[in-house]
Amino acid sequence: MNRLFHVPLSPFCRKVRLVLAEKRIEVELVEERYWERDPEFLRRNPAGKVPVLKLGGRMMAESLPICEYLEETVPEPPLLPEDPDGRYEVRRLVGWFDDVFHHEVTAKLLYERVNKKVMKKGFPDSGNVKAGAKAVKYHLDYMAWLLDRRRWLAGDVMTLADFTAAAHLSCLDYISDVDWNRSETVRDWYAKIKSRPAFRSILADQVPGFPPPAHYADLDF
Image (cartoon, rainbow, N blue to C red; front, side):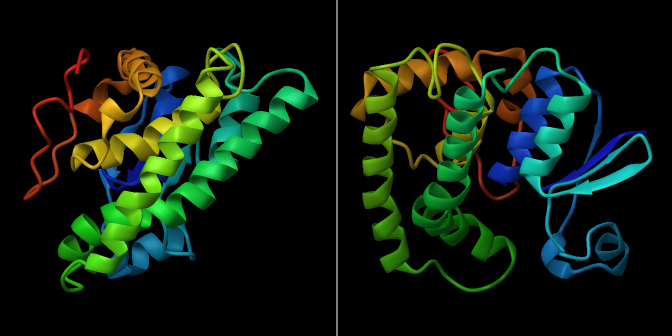
């Protein structure tokens, strides 16, 4: 049985889940409390991080290498362009969201509000929360700028860049930390993404102690 060891509100896990679902690869989802550093899990990934994908007997870690492996082994539907310039732009934006957006926004909002409580590491740092709330506006504006010039974030077709951005924003949307009124363009883009069949399991996530807002699973907001 193929398995994905994951945490529901991890943008990196959600990115892999979206790619798996888009490519119609069935996996069993196994929640992993990676912060407890269980020896069995550390044997799967000595880095002690999720996601970890068990696929066809192979154990794989790190979200981007997993996604690229899936793209190469299951090429349909494609999530990376064929031309080098297009692939570069997708990878640039994947890096933007997994690095810059994650550091400036996700880690300061989601991790402070949710992860600290789940991991019993104290209370949210109000300074970090304020910084994240300020930074997310800049990133939404950048997305709006891109989408005013393109049909999708990286070009004319949906790619891994869109799934990466949506993975991060969906986690923040679960805790009501995205102002969708800031940009109609970004809101319409997200509505298209979360209407895809690949997004269904994401919208069905329920984290004990953290109920999602009413609009979270509403395809029309």
